[in-house]
View 1: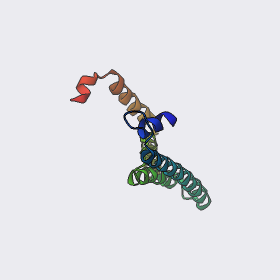
View 2: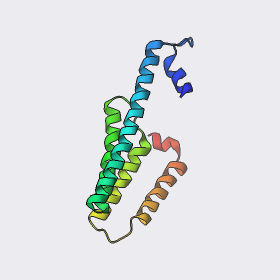
View 3: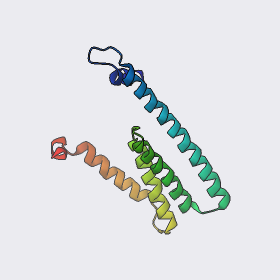
View 4: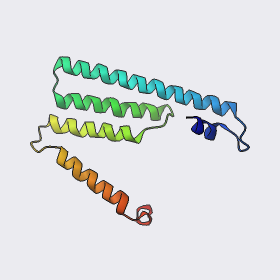
Length: 132
């Protein structure tokens, strides 16, 4: 965090810019509060879904809504959105829909195939053709 703070909070000569520093700390504090709120909502939802016996599909969809919703709130308030949590939220959403609509085929082989293709395209495909 200190390196990031120095990069964002100093002027070109390397002197601290206190206005930028205060804004950086405010964003960091806000991000921590959003993270805590997201985890709290997660635990509340899981406990409620378990007690209400809503089924795995609805429970996973609820987790997806919380995960993606928290990233949306981060974006709304100018806090950095975390791509990893967007992917996790989408994964929960797909798994929840899969369970809810009762697809007979297992989801895991499809996820492995998609990840394999994505990895192949990301690491093997030449960068110059990706940028065009």
